[in-house]
Length: 488
Image (cartoon, rainbow, N blue to C red):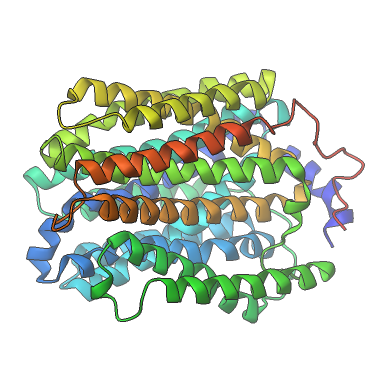
């Protein structure tokens, strides 16, 4: 049981990690996570080349990205269990070994099927890394310095997907698509070697039995919802043997049963994904805001904006990749300074202005048309990313900071799963709205359809601004030392 062990865990963590050593351990994980997340989006610009090279349709090749996200959504809910059952060192080495193997398999892939298998293996490794990184920060870094450290993680989560298409475009313009894996492989192997030699963070694993029914329900639930949303997002219902709402409905039912089962199992501390973090008000508010943030980060910044640049402003793939880069860099550069401000002032004074900037920029996007100058588009995107930058780090630090120590791994898993689902949901909703709003007979979303999608995004922005007003003032909901060990 976690209660009595918590004091020992804290002292073990303190004994094991001087600040310099904690910095080294977190540094290893941050670099590994950066390489992994970069790989999530690096392939997006290569899809057209891959359809020709592998002789498959566009809807089929889309699964190289959708399959990656699907695997992440299925594996992440199990990481709360994995982080309790195994030591951080074991999880890190397993994660990097899987990712490196998947990268090698993808680079050597003779055809689409093997390439997809390689992507799935890569995704299994990536899915384990993010919750491990967040949980380790909560364990190794004292509360007063957590914001700045979470800022570093924000750089990883935000900048890697932003520069992925730019790096991919650069690689593709001079080398073949396989080089996207050959360039990543040495980095992954180097991180694995460093992990084997230096990463000595041994936790206090508990013999938690694996509930197979929960794993299956989780896979059907999150997998079904994401598969359905991805099918909606492709916007071409006729290419799917079943209507997209069927897997969404099946997934939703499975998630209801999954939730009921977890609430039963967590009474005996046997839940695959402990749902007790939802009993903390600040966690729920931060989680809701994070969902709205990721709907816009993935749906608008990664999907709608490049679509607008290429279809309405007629820019090339390379130029559209460069146009979204300044926003990504701003988001990354804000990570640590915003984290340091969070350590001093708490989440509320940062999140509310951030949400206001996000809502404003989304409504400005809705005013764009075929005559909008490119610098104006870049400036609005920079404003959006600055708003997200003021929100992301405080929300991650705040949501986990209010939880007692033994729920950190489950809180991290909930947060990471939600980011995947929200991103897929944003993509599906905005692509569907843009397609429906376009003129009849248009081959894809046109200027009118994209404007409608940006208006819907503006409504999401207003919802985020209203939700941000519920973020509590500093230290309102922190677990006290007395209660930290007892979540029952």
